[in-house]
Image 1 (cartoon, rainbow, N blue to C red):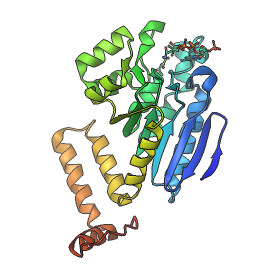
Image 2: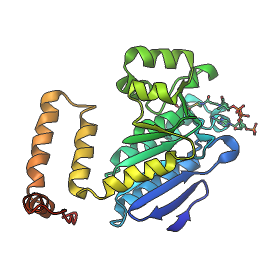
Image 3: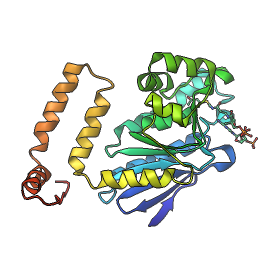
Image 4: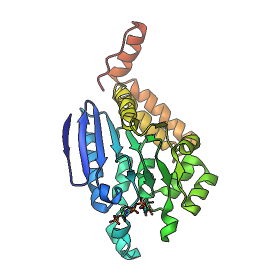
Length: 260
Ligand code: CAA
C-alpha cells in the first residue's frame, strides 16, 4: 500500500482501490473549502490513474463529516459566497468516471450527508447517523441536500429530515434506500473495500458506462435515458472485453478483462 495525501485528505492505494480519508478530526471533519479542494483534486488525480479502478471516501469512526465548516461560513454574505463560487468544486465530483464508494460512520450531517449522496454506493457503520441539520443554524442545504435526499428517500421522509434537522440511524437509512449496507463499526471500512475490490475486477468500460447511465437516470426522462442506455450498450460491443467476456462464458472459464 502506498500512502500520499495533502493537508486534510490522506490518500492510500490498496491494489486497484484508491482510499481518500477526510482528516480534520478535531472538528468532526467539517468540510472547509481547502478540504473540498484537496479532496476533489485527489479524486481527479486518481480518476486519471489507470492502476486505480474504484475510489473509496471515508472519515473516521466518530465522523464521516459533520457538515460544511460553520466557522468558515458564519461571516459570509450572499455576494461573498457568490464570488467564491464554492460549490463549483462540488460539481466536479459528478465528473469522476470511476465508481466512488462512501464508507461512513458516526456523524454524516449537512455537507457530510451531501458528499455521501454524491458518491455511487454507501457502506455505513451501525453507529452512523444521517441528517441535514442546516435548518437549526438558520439556513438550508446548499450542496444538493434538498434534491438528492428527496430523490433517494422520497418527498415525505426528505421533508421530515430537512424541516426538523433530525438525524436518522443507519438501519432506517438502509430501509429508506439512502445507503447500501450496514456493518458493525469495526468492519464497515473492510466491507467497503471488499465491495470496491469486487467492482475493480469487473470490465472497466462497462463499469464506467453503467455508472454514467445510472447517474443520467436522475436527470433524464425515461425515453431519453433508454436512448443513452442503448447507445452505451452498442458501444460496449466495440470493446475487447465484450468479446472476451462472451467467449469466456462459452468456454466455461473466468474472463480476463483488459479495459479495452
Ligand atoms: N463546522 C465547524 N466546526 C464543527 C462542525 C461544523 N459543521 N461540527 C462540529 N464542529 C466542531 C465543534 O465546533 C467542536 O469544535 P471545538 O472543540 O473547537 O469547540 C468540535 O467540532 C466537536 O464538536 P462538538 O463539541 O459540538 O461535538 P458533539 O459531539 O457535542 O456534537 C454534533 C456533535 C452534533 C455533530 C455538533 O458538533 C453539531 O451539531 N455540528 C454541526 C452540524 C451542522 O449543523 N452541520 C451542517 C453544517 S452547514 C452545511 O453543511 C451547509 C451545506 O449544505 C454545505
